[in-house]
Length: 112
Image 1 (spheres, rainbow, N blue to C red):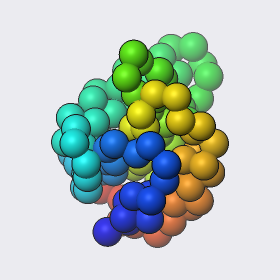
Image 2 (spheres, helix red, strand yellow):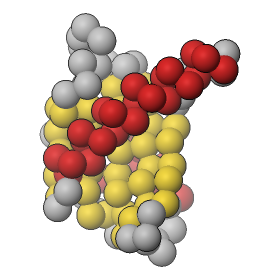
Image 3 (tube, rainbow, N blue to C red):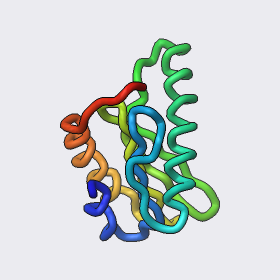
Image 4 (cartoon, rainbow, N blue to C red):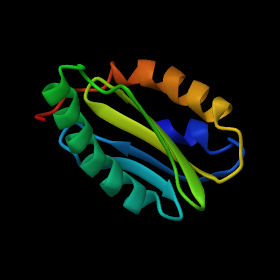
């Protein structure tokens, strides 16, 4: 599984890979399925905002809540994200996600 490489990152509580069709390809951790569903929903909204503003495709997403920090990258129509416990440095996760995003281009593209 592609997201196995992210399990050892400090603070990770959930991981998700969302396919080009918006369905989860992989998810792990407490809240992994919820993370996948919400990333798919956010992706649609961000794509619409990018189009309306003429900003182009959204390739990186980061947000912070009371308990978690979520970082995600988009590549080849896929969205790969990690939720980390609040207060952990997200740089290692961002770098690992960016490396894995390069591998997403080798995955088959579905309808989406």
